[in-house]
Image (cartoon, rainbow, N blue to C red):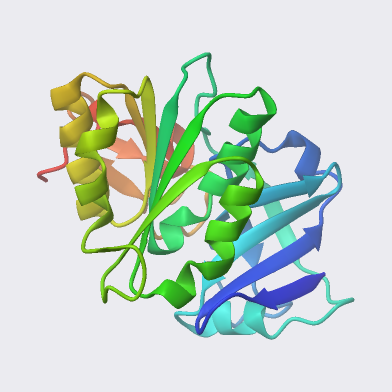
Length: 248
């Protein structure tokens, strides 16, 4: 196990997971017990950020509470209890070129996706948004290293475009065959609307609080357009954008 601090509150955890790594697909997630005891009681869901080799995975997370504080303090040799891979991942089809749009910690599953797409030489444009340049520095380098064209946006204007990452999307859409997005709900709602107007298929990876990750607690619901509630852990976390009722 290795813990890498990428920015002030951004960390990347590398784990030996020989049963989970080879079975993982971009967009899937794992449920992590952050401590060996009962505090905190519930596992935390994390997207598989990267598959480093056949036996290791990486998780990208922001420290926001007790569970992530414990993860940031892990040392080599520590053991974590994981369940996964879980959920439905991204559709990696023959579409080319594609655009990946990530905001904040929502960037997490997109590096795994980009690496899978680039393995089949698909052209990938990556649009990344964050609060500051410091949060994107290392992640931008990772996407460039795997052969993606990268454009960034920051809330404070410290690097790239000063504003929302979705402001970068309209001039890119006419050349795209598919979009993939993960980030704050308003960002994905805007991405979905832009893609719908441009008739570009779009998949989104949704985030939610989960108690089980297996469809038992029903705590991770969102409103669907036709099917009432959608359960992110079982029917997602990746959904076609048109399946989600973004205004509810």
